[in-house]
Amino acid sequence: MAQASGGLRLAVEAQIDAMAPRDRMLLAGLIGFFSIVFVLGLVWLVRGAVDDKAARVRSAKDNLEVIQAMADNYDLAQQKVKRGEERMAQFKGQPASAYLELVARNNGVIDSLTVNQQGSDVVGTMRQTQYRAELKRVPLEQAVNFLHELETSGYPASVTLARFKATGAAGTKVIDLTLELLCYEIEGQ
Image (tube, rainbow, N blue to C red; front, side):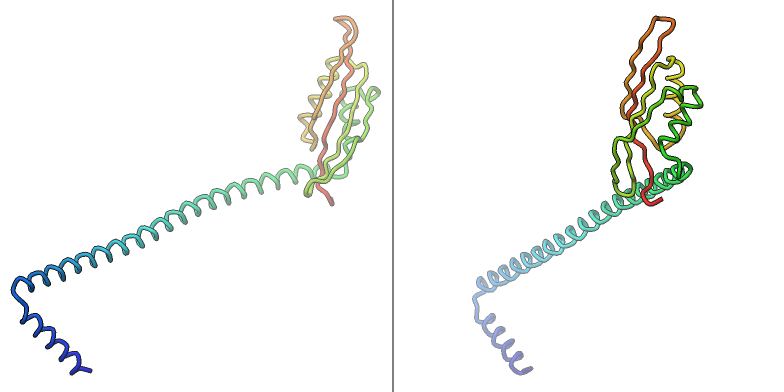
């Protein structure tokens, strides 16, 4: 094999020696031109591969930042849910109707209160129960105090609709108050 490659080299050298000087210059120019094209092509391929890898790294870093932000938001949401569950646990075993009666008693309107459960749905781990509470012919100040205590007490309920109907003269106005409430409890507790 060594003789074959040595013989080939001698044959190529013999061909080059047999060429005219002008043909040797052309051959050298062609070899130089194709060498430069080859090197430039190789550089272009390597640069494209490096740019592709760099773009992938940038994309991965961006994705990592998004994932870290989402993880932080998830942790904050989990803490908020835990605080909400702890707050809801304070009222465990106290039905909304009993709580509404307690608020009405605190504000002196227990005799005017009627409470009816409208329906109940389970959403995820939460039970949402709809109630309708009505206060009939109560003084404005007591109705407002009842509503204020209900909204600010921390009980897991929200007023979804409130209707006020005022009757009576300017100094002796009484209110008919109809509330639709959504009360929450953790299912299974």
